[in-house]
Structures are given as C-alpha cells and as structure tokens.
Image 1 (cartoon, rainbow, N blue to C red):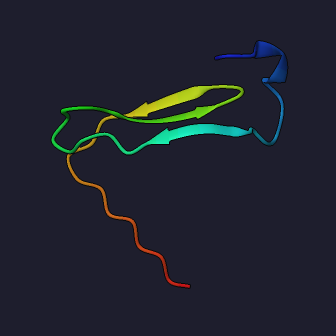
Image 2: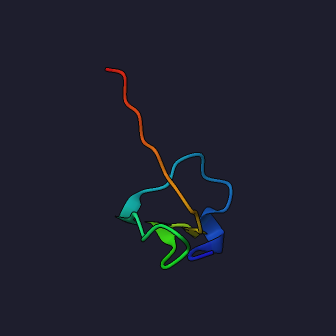
Image 3: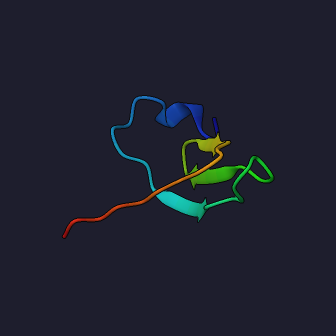
Length: 50
C-alpha cells in the first residue's frame, strides 16, 4: 500500500506498468498511486477484439 488514506477509493491513477519477463525471470508490475501489484507468470496472452 502506498497511500492507506485512499484505501476506499474506487479508482486509482496508473503510474507505471512493466510486463516483466516470462518463465518467472522477472515479475510484471502494475504501480498506481494507491498500491503496487507484482505478478509472476510463465506465459501471458493479451487479446483485444475491437
């Protein structure tokens, strides 16, 4: 948690996003003004149907 005062906010400002490296070499990281989320993964697929 970066800012516990914003704990009940429904939206967070995105500060950074790193995809990381597959096979657990480096975690993907999503950073906001409220929290930071690290994700360890083996494979990742992003599909967009616009």
